[in-house]
Image (cartoon, rainbow, N blue to C red):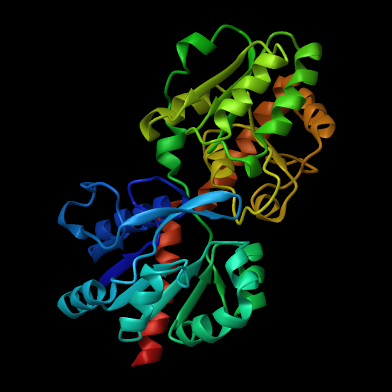
Length: 374
């Protein structure tokens, strides 16, 4: 099968959607399919050899409390048309298929064998400009033959604006990568209890509440440490400044960490904390921590509650509540046996999200679309 995987986002910047596409490409290629990734790129992408086609120049655009780097160029049609005419794909799989401008252009120019995966749980564009977008987007939505949502909450959001039959196929995790037996980070292996946060340092990820919670924790557990792993944003300096103003010792900001090094950070952690305030369709970091055998403290929001069962693989706490967050963290940090039990259950559950299994489910969706078209 010849498959196009289309991303609206700058492929030079790692993110949930682009990582999802990379994992599918890897699995499909191993299975013997011919896969080409199409996306805007701010710098050359060599990961896929000649199987990456850059289209469009990405620009930063505020979206859902984050920054989406998408191509807003109106001059994409001829490039897209040339690629589709040349490659003659069996399936065109678009991620965030209604995102401007690349995905919408691909849908418009495609021959109709389209699958769309909906990742988002919030988009002001659907509501702020609704009278205009309804006329534009619904026209192209009808050209999507197979509709996938990565979670129940993502399906509910998409179905609210674009009613249809969706198949829920979640994100996956590279179990072998994150469960490998690697040594922890030497400088953090000094007997202190380590809390690990892994994500972009954006306001909606809840770092502010984690810092407030850690101030409480430090009074109860002096031999503790907070390790914050993630690429910097405009909020990074504010968080570092806040930690300094509150005289919080043992708060480590590592910046971006290579994917190859992440397993060592998970092995360094005693507890992994994900205190996002909302707008999360899924919890990829939760899966990574579970695959590494680590218990998770996470906000009780829909995207996370679909992954973590409270009291089993970790604990869910109300978002934006630093007191409850601190109490939950202390309860695990002071109970090594419970941490091990939860970590073991998480490792088992992570097996359900192996990319090999997820890729097979996506291929089944492709087959349904192709058989229906025939």
